Structures are given as C-alpha cells and as structure tokens.
Image (cartoon, rainbow, N blue to C red; front, side):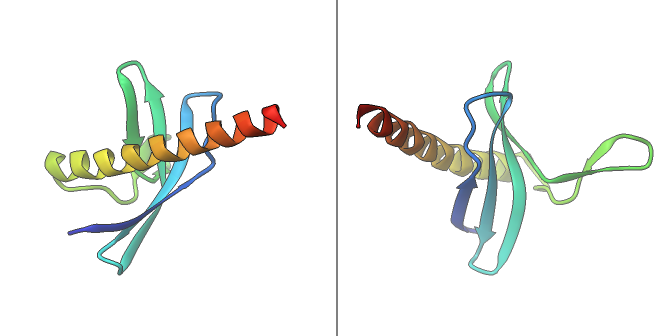
Length: 97
C-alpha cells in the first residue's frame, strides 16, 4: 500500500481540530474526512467516523494494525505541517501589504 496523494483542507488555528485531510491510496482508493487533532500529547489523526445509535462514534474506515496507522499518520502530519506553514506565510504576507 502506498499513499499517492494527500490533500489538506480547512487548516484552522483555533480549536482542537486543526485540519481535514483526504488521502489517495495506490492512485485507486480515496479516504476523505480524516481529521488532524491537537491532543494533550501533540497532533494525531482521527479516521472518518459515524455516530452509532448508541451514541458512540465508530470509525468508518481505519488501518488494521498500528504500523499502518503510524505510517499514515506520519505522512498526513508532514503534509499538514507544510500546509500550515504555507497558510501562516500567506497570512504574514497579507498583513505586510
């Protein structure tokens, strides 16, 4: 499995949810609505989920093992940091004009 594209949307400064991300796997399969969350121990990803009838949230799609989750998280967080830096730079340029 190879992640061939990462799209970071809605980069936010406020609140715990920092971004919403979509990934493409092997140029063939897309997973939307992966969230980048600021937690007590730093940034992490939350896979897309749905609220069940019992009120609990359950992942709709998720990695089967921790190694795959860590690999996906590493790639997503790298792309998020790049997007957040670009957004910050654009905001600074707007202020300076």
